[in-house]
Amino acid sequence: MQGENLYRYKGILNINGLDRRFIFQGVHMIFAGEEKNNWGNEQRKSELVFIGKNLDKEKLTAQFRACIVK
Image (cartoon, rainbow, N blue to C red; front, side, top):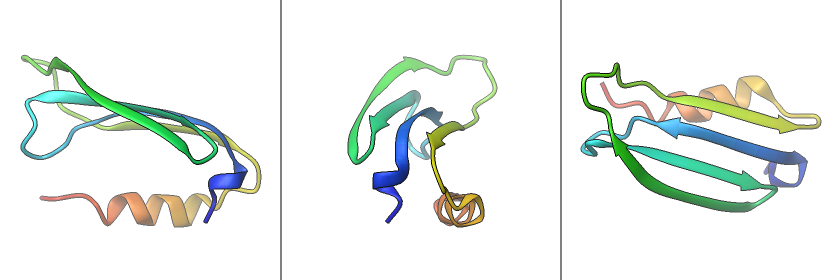
């Protein structure tokens, strides 16, 4: 678990099956997220930002890549 080392995180997710952006943010292990505006003609993509200490970048990257559906 890296929750205690996460000071802040936020992002926009392109989730398969949703026509709208999923916006999330959190502090430590407290998380909130909701669907927002439609993508429209904009390129669909996911963007994530993590701020913390001693974060394992490779592990975080691998965990999120495992969620990708092609």
